[in-house]
Image (cartoon, rainbow, N blue to C red):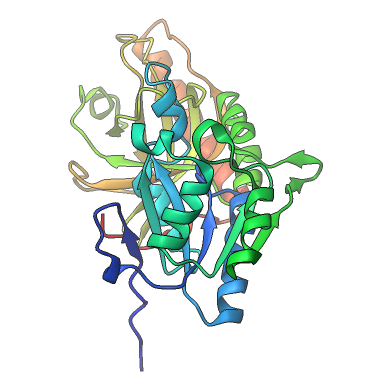
Length: 327
């Protein structure tokens, strides 16, 4: 007999106390990208929760504190809130607590955060946190403070050491830097899955259709720091999977306009307008470039498709594991 997966609970500031799973073990962090280091923190929380017979939740903050403190500085996020929650939902957690990071949150002292939020509102039984996570006004709260205060309150605390992959420290910053260089394979090694974006297919200039390459166009966050160029990608539409070649950039042959992701799905016929797609980046093929004419562009697109198919055939058939989330 089949069973329905447990619903992933999203707890917000407005969620009434009776709707919050009581006595949970929490994994505490910003979790941008939900990379291998984050997954180690989450894994420890899941182990603690299983041992105690408790639910396990992620506690995260929106917007990212960097965006609050530097609102005029573009922040390249690896995952928006929706995709972060979808990734968290696939880890085995029972849910996530999304705390609004605003002026009041920025003024909250570390001890008030422990006493009011973790103990008073969530009644946590355990905490898992990364070695470099800080919280509270002036970032005064540290993992060591949690380790000191937790046992006094009957709360288990796990501090996760840093994680390396072949001598490279895993961090959201390192992943952003790799993506900025087009090194999507290195980003995938640090994430534990191919980096992806999700978005709704919009109407474009329909030039691709005239060139024999009809594309699904997706407008990314203006702060996206992915290197402009041509990529081999895998595309998800719900449970469906497709292989594709994608261009991310300003289309210098035509208008040099705002950055746009244009995806050509191999062996696909149909209307994708209005669909939400997940696009996972597998391999960087070449830089974006300007062509002298349409024939040269089409010839290059033919070669890009051949190279993309070859790159996808040689790559592991990996795709991000994503859960269902009600926002």
